[in-house]
Image 1: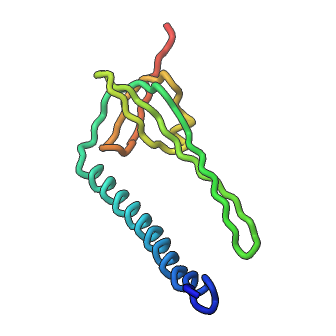
Image 2 (image 1 turned 120 degrees about the vertical axis):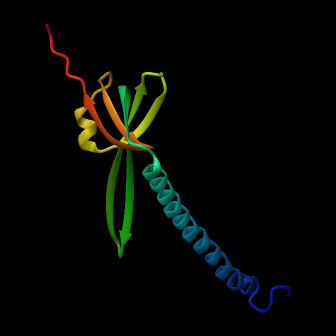
Length: 133
């Protein structure tokens, strides 16, 4: 028999630790990559000047992520929401920035005002108030 007395069982028991090790390395590698990527973006943002420019809100969107967890037979579901706004500056360039839910609820598409940002970090939007004459 080419697989020993237990048939294919010897190969399975010798390959299982290798497979588990590869999965472990992929998971840890992904976590490390995400941490390094986040820290480098944070550092790049900190090196950028704080800019305030006239801008118009051209789009709003939200991204809802659902998470399911299982702990000893207890199922738990949670969601998280990220909010994004696309701003158009005077040159016609557009940028999408992540903002808080509170800010998201207070602005509307076609609002015009002063956008303050640093790199990809949203710092604020001061809406121009129009009074009727």
